Image 1 (tube, rainbow, N blue to C red):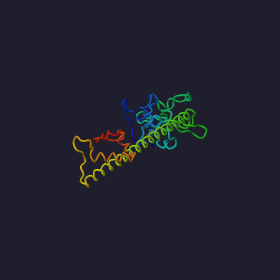
Image 2: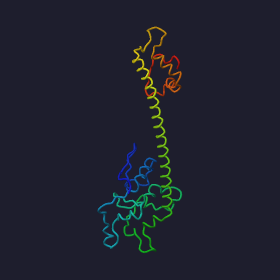
Image 3: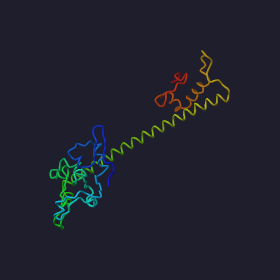
Image 4: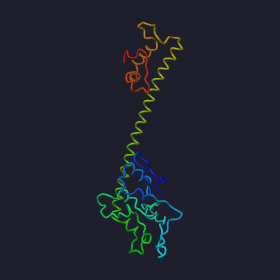
Length: 245
């Protein structure tokens, strides 16, 4: 069984999973196909399926059977149309190799319940005929290729996201290290009872700026932080920093 989510809404439209509404006549985008393939075949298990009274009067199978889902995993059932569809052919049934596709499994739906299962080994039912057909195999191959492509794209996105997260974490740690050193300088001046700023109008830059510049001359990574302002999460101004930037 696939996802229980029955629909997917984009900016343009709402995609309903019931194959009786959302059939192969729609041109699905990659995002829509990704939703549908991730959700899987629409396989509602109902307590009662509608009965075809004409078939019942003839003593034939007269309604859909949920147990068919187990035997044919790509089988779908439309509650709206009371008909069976093929998930793979509905989404990927068009294109080269699909010339022999039966449109009933893709668009109209199949509801002749009396002929769904075969009689003996030599007379296959509609289910076995379709799911063993070349056209179904071609559609299934397209579905497999799409899932493989989707997996590769997801892995690429996940890799890029992890790389960005690692870079962000490294930058945060770098900023924390620089700020910690600036706080250490401040604590030193406070403990020594020294002024931070120099005399007004004098060339003296003040104790704080002088200590920062000493540290910058001896630590390239510390100096780099002052030169590359884009490394800072927030803009910081330190009086006199442009003197050697």
